[in-house]
Image 1 (spheres, rainbow, N blue to C red):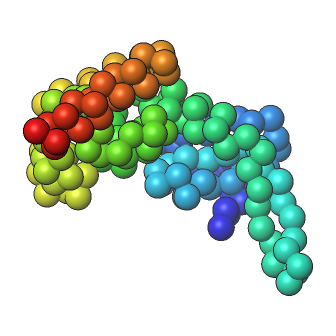
Image 2: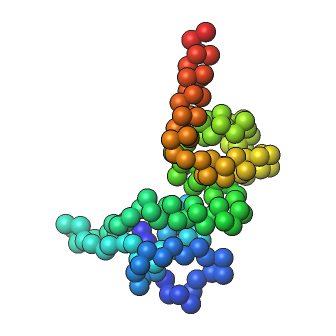
Image 3: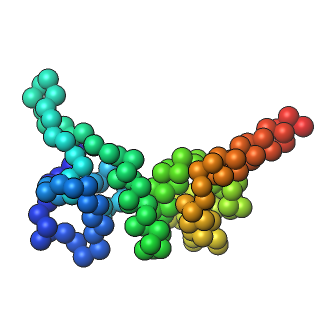
Length: 151
């Protein structure tokens, strides 16, 4: 569910993604408590008369959130998870690409450990990488994993 909010009720640290609309919604489903959307959402009713929302350009919304997070560089576990999912990476794939262990990353994400050295830098470098290059890197990693399992 998206809650409509007024401009004067925004927290100071709010990240507002402007999608060319007037209404402002708190986008809690992003997993980031401070993300708000201005427009980009279509209201509708289901056959039972219940209100629902349809995102007009979800990939573009997520792209803008990721761009803003990269600029802010204040990346905690929630931001890390959002960006990792945006890139389409499992935790295991990210661990392979970054050189961090899955266990260390998982502990940090769950609030049980410190941020692994280089995890955020690796994530930001992956964001800058062209999609084709990232796909090749992941394919090479999966080939290596397959070869080590069959040996």
